[in-house]
Length: 469
Image (cartoon, one colour):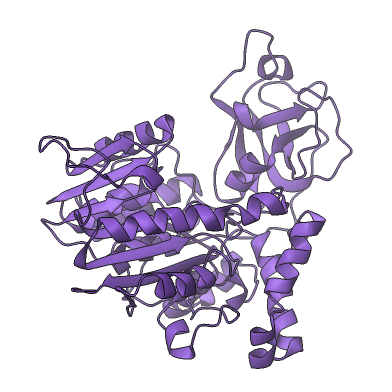
């Protein structure tokens, strides 16, 4: 059941993707009809939020059972007594799953409207309230306390402060305006804080604003899988090359029981600040974050012994995570992807520069995990094929846990190699709505299966650096 329109792309990007998902290898394996069906299903899924919200428990501070109890109490408060289950994942022991109720199609629409930007809109679809910086326009006479209908300007065409908007907008639900129009668009500089408290969202998901901030980290399921696949051990030295905002960094430190060293790098200073804030909030002490360009992290010269940060000498790390900058086409929900083809294709060479540095920094016998949150072949399976050809010292490894599907055909990899990869493909699930009645009838294992399939698009490859090569 498709509630929102399929994701739209710029024409040249649409042509590019169409060729990717109709490549000869894929057509030969699946047949034209099935390949086309999977591609169209993917486009529909990308515009909808995942069916299950995933939160990672900070097991450094509390047990999953204890946090689950606290979270159930919080959800009951938010949902005014409505009983929504909180599930433990049988393979990922540090996450909790909360089904989203929706899309709700019987909501009344109010005359007073608030238009928000696309990114704010996507956050609302995943449980957030509307904050003032996300508001682009409101109806003429909106006052604090008014019931308003909230819409997303998915194409970015609404002018800030407009009193009406006739362009393409998507209904997100209803809420209560916390401020008047004149407050929101005050001439005294942009305001911050809560703008609309969502009372009837199209997708009913818990808000995690200031909810158990030291105990919970809102994180997509495949992003949690990545850290488990890297499998860092207490006492090891780990490098997270492109670490912001620190979800995986803090997870790695937690899996190591805060024993050892996790070096986190990002080249944007504000993002590095966010990593440090998250480490402090989650009370993790083994993380050291640096503002540095990962492509320059390999030192050509001997360094001072006391120097903690980059650049680093070759073979300095037991394990390396390269969660690479990517075109981000796997993110959900996304109804209008704005990047140009030039931007989409710019990531492959950057990823290869980072990968080359990662291999050099890894000790022989060490593990390198490469991941992206995108769906293209060029940034995923083609990178694996390139890596295996370029670096004879690398060997693909089985992944544990293996929850996603195998890699996609089209990059010339053998079937046994594809089986070692994990591609989380949103089209693998059925696009279905969830209401309270159907939720009560659902078995726990069915909801876990749904969480595994109906998530963001994501890719993971695991390599070992062989000794003596």
